[in-house]
Image 1 (cartoon, helix red, strand yellow):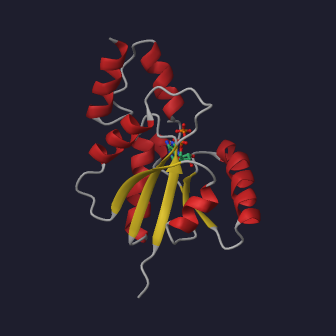
Image 2: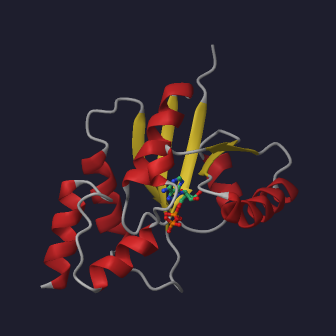
Amino acid sequence: MKKRIAVYPGSFDPVTFGHLDIIDRAAKIFDHLIVSVFVHSSKKHMFSVEERAEMLKAALKGKKNVTVDCFEGLLVDYVKKKKTCVVIRGLRAISDLEYEFQIAAINRTLYPDIETVFFMPRQRYTYLSSSVVRDIAHFKGDVSKLVPPHVAKAIAARKG
Ligand code: ADP
C-alpha cells in the first residue's frame, strides 16, 4: 500500500506544546509526517531556521515516523517535491479559521490536488502561540508550561 505522507509547515519560532500536540495527532493518522520549518527571510525571528529545526528534532526524538526539514519558496512546490498532497495545520480557535481558510484556498488554486487537514489541540493549548511565548520571554517570564524544557533553556540562554 502507498505510504500516506503529510507535511506540517510552520515558523515554529519556537516550537510549543501546541505544535507538539498537533504533531502527535497527525503522526497517529499518517505513515510519515514531515515537520518543516518555513524560511521566511523578511520576517523577524527569535531563533534561526537551523536553531528552530534543531529544537524540533530534540523535541521529536524517538518518534519514528516524524522527520524535520526546512523549506523556502511556495508550499505547493515543496509538497509536490515531497511526493504528497497533504498539508497539516492546527486550528486553535475560530480566529485562526479566516487566515487558514485563505491559505488553504490559495494553495488549492495553485495545486488542485492539495488537501489541507486541520487538527484541534487539547483545550489547554488553544491560547498558545509562539508569539505569546516570545512576548513572555521578552519580559523574562516563565515559559516552562508552554514549551519543552530544552526550548525554555534556549530561551533563557538567549536572554543572557
Ligand atoms: P504560530 O507562530 O502562530 O505558533 P506557526 O507558523 O509556528 O504559528 O504555526 C504552524 C501551524 O501550527 C499553524 O497551523 C498554527 O495554527 C498551528 N499552531 C500553532 N500553535 C498552535 C496551538 N497551540 N495549537 C494548535 N495549533 C497550533
